[in-house]
Image 1 (cartoon, rainbow, N blue to C red):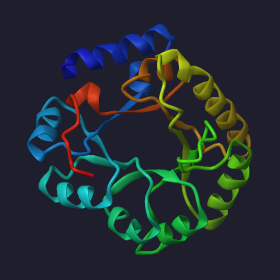
Image 2 (cartoon, rainbow, N blue to C red):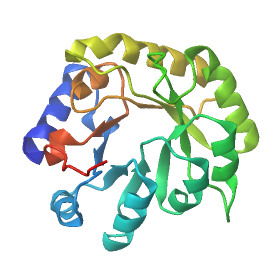
Image 3 (tube, rainbow, N blue to C red):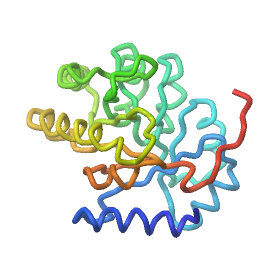
Image 4 (cartoon, rainbow, N blue to C red):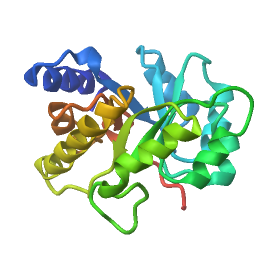
Length: 221
């Protein structure tokens, strides 16, 4: 899929939902992708890129233009928060107090965060349980973090429509939480297999890798 075709699908999905395509931020997830390949997308005007490994972000960022907005989209170990904090424009995976305390360490105010929600209740995934989201956002705010919204990774869908109930639920919870915390507006949801459904359900951020860069490179991990 070419970058132009992908962006046309994003525009079509937004317009079909009666939304302005500019309301949707596309994070090009560049894990395992080389600096040269990232630059190819950058040269087409893209500025939001995402990584899910602290070391990979730390190695790439200094070799790329400094106007890139880096998103950390994976589970982050507390001890590696010091690596990501100076580089990230947004952390998508805040979910526990140990990480929050590590994120708050350092000069100045830390970058904003999204509260990660385990919307499918899957044991192997990080994130706040659905019943914990309101309380989770509350302690994040009380600790002094700038919480901009919610993020979720639903169960892997066999068909794009399989993700819709999870996106609907995340939007519902966001709407409830934002009554007490108006800054909680963002919905980071939707990936290569279901981003059009996510946009239809109000995603303000989608995290897409394969649809932009093609199949992942083997890493041996």
